[in-house]
Amino acid sequence: MVTIRRYPVPADSYNPNGPLNDLMRSQLEHFVEVAKRLPPQLQVNVPVPSADDAPAASRFIAAVTQQLMSVKKSPIRLVKKPAAKTQTPGLAIAASAEPSKSPRTGPKKKTSSKSKTRSQSK
Image (tube, rainbow, N blue to C red; front, side, top):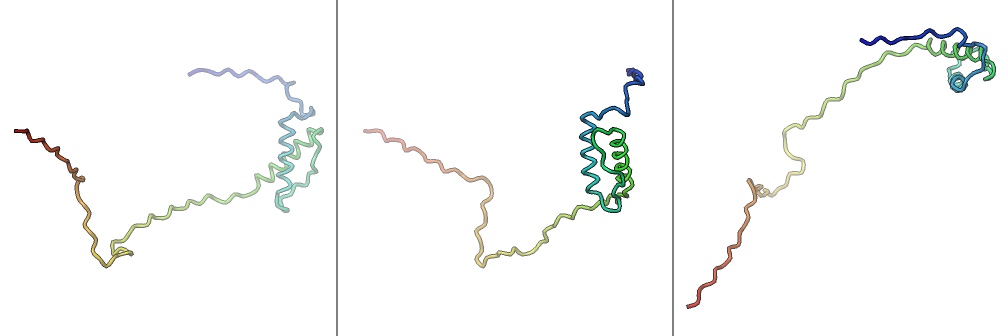
C-alpha cells in the first residue's frame, strides 16, 4: 500500500479576520437566501452581515447551519411497486358473429412458374 504524505499546514495560512474570498462570498449569498426561506419559528436572530465583515459572516453561516441541522427529517418510506395487471382468461370484448378464417400455419408457399419448353419443329 502506498503511503500518502501529508505536510503540516502552516499556522499563518489561516486568518480569521482576513477578507472573504470569492467562495465565502458566494456561500454567504447562498445562506442569506436560505435564511429568508426558513419558516418563521426557525428564523435566525443574527443580522445579515456585509461581505466585508468576515467574522460576522462566519457567525451568520454557523447560525443558519445550526437551525437547518435542528430540523427533524421524516424517515424515508419505501413504497412497493404496484403489481402488474394480469389478463384473465375469457371472451374477447370485440367478438364477431361470423366465424373468422383460421390463420395459415407454416411458411407461405411460393408458386413457381415453370417455363414452357418450346416444341421442336418437325
